[in-house]
Structures are given as structure tokens and as C-alpha cells.
Image 1 (spheres, one colour):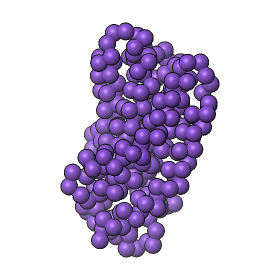
Image 2 (cartoon, rainbow, N blue to C red):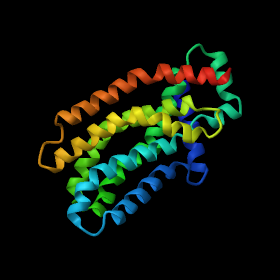
Image 3 (spheres, rainbow, N blue to C red):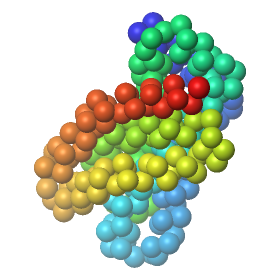
Length: 222
């Protein structure tokens, strides 16, 4: 795990030094929710109904957008090739990239979500509950984004390709996320069946995606 920590610290320092690289996902999320509020009109009732779908779609797109060039720098400067040659497994490298994406993309969105959801007709308390549900499913979105970024690494128009690849993987998370948020806003508890399924999806993606992401990175180096 010392390798994972070293890579994570390097990427975090680089993101903060770049003058906003860590901010892109949150900025995308903010713009998306603001445009959604304008698109659905001034009716608070219509905004509140659309809020769960807008929240999850904005979060999924923002996290995927933040992951488009997750591996590009390491492939360009040759550091990924060196790691792959010196170590039999790249799990620590994958883990560092997943934690980096979670800290710089998913976490800021979850923290800011209650504030932006007030633009969509929800109270702050309702927004906080919806953000907690998002926190249960956000790991699944992060793992999917890391996987699709690895699958498209080194390819031209890789970001667009990653978005296309991510769609079928992200769909179940969005369906249960929106359903869980709607159930919560309708008066159900925070941890209903839909939220538990979200947690199960996050655990499943944590177990299933590393193998395929690491294999995709090795193929891209050949």
C-alpha cells in the first residue's frame, strides 16, 4: 500500500497545483443542476419531482468526465509501463487511482449536493438525505469510471468512447439511485431496499472491476 499512497499523494499534489484539475467534476455538476433548474421551469413541484433524476445523472456524468484522462499522463511519460514491468500486479496502482477519483470528484459532489438541490425545489434536509443515498452509490460510479477510462486509455477520442462504454454499466446504478431518492422524498426511510441494492452494486463493482481494469491497462501497453 506504500505504492498506492505514493501515487495518490503525487496525483493529489498535481491536481491542486494545476489550478483547478480537481474542480472540474464539481463545476460540471453545478452547471448541470443549474441548467436543469432552468429547463424544468419555475414550478417547485416539477423541480422536486425531477430532482432525483437530475442529481444522479449530473453525478454520473461529472464523475465519468473527471476520469476521462485518468491514465493518460502515466501512459505518456512511461511511468505506467515501468510499474507494469517491475510489479506483477497493478492492484495498488488501480486502488490509488480509484481513491483519487473518489476524493477529487465524488466527495466534493456529495458534499455540495444539498446546496445545489435547493435550486431544484428541495429543502436542505431533503437534499442532505438524497446526498447520503448518493454516497452509497457513488463508489459504484467511481469504479465504473475507472474501468471505462482504463478500457479507452491510449485511444483517440478516448473520453467519448469511455462515455459510451460506461452507459450500460451505469444504467442499473442510476435506476436504483433515482428510485431510492424518490422513495426517500416520498417519506420512506433512508436505507430502504433500493438503497441496500445500491450498496450491493458498489460492493460488486469494487470486487469485479479491478481485474478488468488492470487487464485493459496491460493490453493498452502492448
